Length: 613
Image (cartoon, one colour):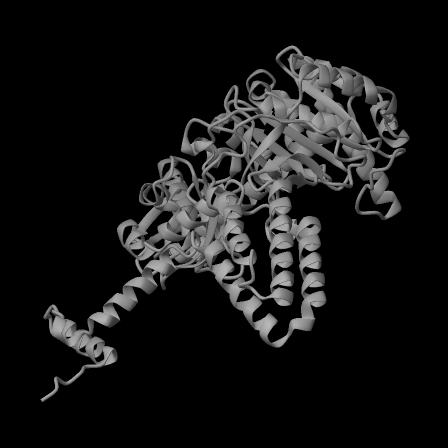
């Protein structure tokens, strides 16, 4: 009697049933054919090492193709030769679109395609087993030595084998149920797209970056996580094995010739340029000493000096250490507290003059041009301005709030992103562009980039080299590390001399605003506005007091309820109780019973006491 053979599907079904019952299934080797085990093992081995066996696989397929062509299509050899030449030419010229980014890679692929095409052409004519074609084919496998040794192939194999263990990794890091959708090996490492399980978010993955680095065996700071805009349960995980920003990047020169175009500040880790527009946008640049903030200031000046529709005013309270090299391109520079206050006061006067002109002409915005340039105020060491020139902060606030429409832009840089410097004025809240270099503490990243940004993945405290920065702007809402260009001192001097003769002059409207009488109209207006506001507040307070007094005097002898008094005087309950307590101390009001008040008996006996007189 032959043993009943159990199908593999049936075995799996029984195993699942046993697991549901809490019993660990044990396989009976007598139910499995050893031939099947051997076949499965060989297939698994070949699949695991499919990358290493690719040249041998191609040789075997070429042998099979040569046999078929020689047996049934021997007259096709011209077509085979033409296809081989076309393929080789395509790989040599357009291989970069097939991820062959280096010239040596495209050359190797073209040579391999040419030799293989020539062998197939000869095999079609003579037969694949005709001497010396088999020996040539075997010898051709030696061309696979660069393939076996190529770093990208080895990296791809390593990545595939690492990510094959993602189910176990996801369990260990607390992202159970997530799965790998795709993986791509690039020049600097690899990136994968991951589908999260239900209920998991990108923020959950960001919080587990240290665990992911440990599980994948990478160096610290090598993992980047970015959300996928299309779906909330998708993310892109990138591993940087070779830091593309390990070395400084030389400045290629100005990237703009007008303020209307976005400026190039540096390079992202994927090699794409960092371009952002400063037209009608205030900017904040922050970072500790030595993090690269001065380099960013030089990049901005190098680009702004090349724009003939921009005037730059500079403030540098370090006696001009940073901005004086650009003095020939600056229309005005302030290096002391008094000069800084005067400069910002004049900027407000220009703002008012331009706004008045726009209102008279029925226009809404000031369009920068050579004869009507934009005005950019670049403040280096903004924290020093807060400490040493507090009067100037009021003018800076006014520019931040009202300067966009008249093309008056404020760019503030600071090495000390303290709460006093960054959080106690309206300037910070008006900054559309935030550039953060390395900071010491997490809260400093939030002070520069915005509240809660560190929790969302903007880890400015983990930037590990000068010049590396994070950029937050309306078009850059995903944390991506970048590095600024490096301007040497001789480059700064050469650029400043080159662009000094191309700098524009202030327009007639702005000059007329600056020539107003020395009584400083804006101070008068500001003072009159404050006076009007003070009088208005006093009048409103007196009206409230009069309403409360009238309500108390017109109250019946059992008193008016608190609700009636709140409605009559338009006061909140806490404010009303505080005011009633004060009136009681002064003998003007008295509490008749719980929750009921009226004027004192003396006032109640007067004719003005209402219907009780």
